[in-house]
Length: 65
Figure 1 (tube, rainbow, N blue to C red):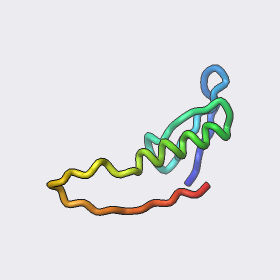
Figure 2 (cartoon, rainbow, N blue to C red):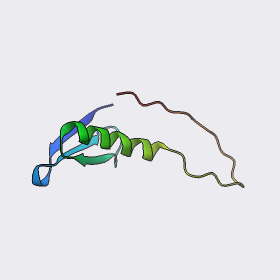
Figure 3 (cartoon, rainbow, N blue to C red):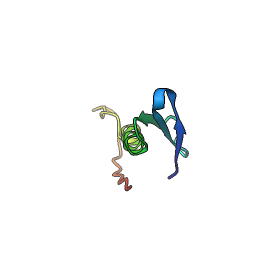
């Protein structure tokens, strides 16, 4: 996984996961931006609440930093 960092407005740092469109966040520091974009990625990859009538499959993902 590749995280790209770019300068944002007012001194913020913008981070995005190159391989996952839409996984973008920001922070006051590079480290905070990194943590925030990983949180955004976790939310994007977390399953939707299950519908009782739908067939579903559970997959466990582990993100390491």
